[in-house]
Amino acid sequence: VTINYLTTGSPGLAMAARETIEGAFNPAKTLKSVDKVYQLLKKQGTVGSYTITYGNGKQYHGKGPLKRMEESAKSKGKDNGGADKADFKEASSNREAFKDEANRIKAAGGVGQKGKGNNLNKINSPGKKYNEQDGTGVTTGASTSTSSSRAQQKQESRWL
Image (cartoon, rainbow, N blue to C red):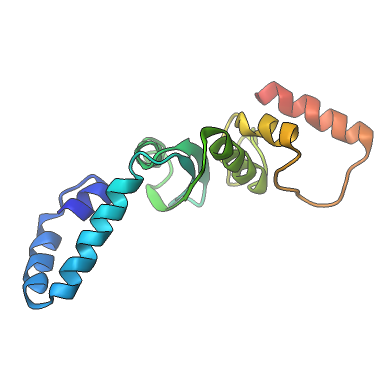
């Protein structure tokens, strides 16, 4: 019940009953389940970045603990066919989590696509500026000319 509730928000009583019966005959499986609960509880407050992929193929990228990822999955899932899968990556600090979020957004094609592409993010992450300050981040291909790079920066700055 605990594992199901932590991962889905639902108690899943039928699944819990089956696991209890299986656990009585397989103590190693019970220990594995206890470890899984421990790992999930440990991560609940951990900051990181995440990507949620929905049933309609669209993605949303965010920053925060697992609870925030779950909230995003539920709130955006209503209009996008429900959450199909989610990827969470721990970060060493809030700044690093923001940078990872910005990298996820950039790798998915950026923000403000208004129906073009798969990205649901409407604004960029503060991590974009952190990446610029630190000289880090995802690259998306060959270098562009100075004028097109300035135009792109100007366009992106409107989304921040």
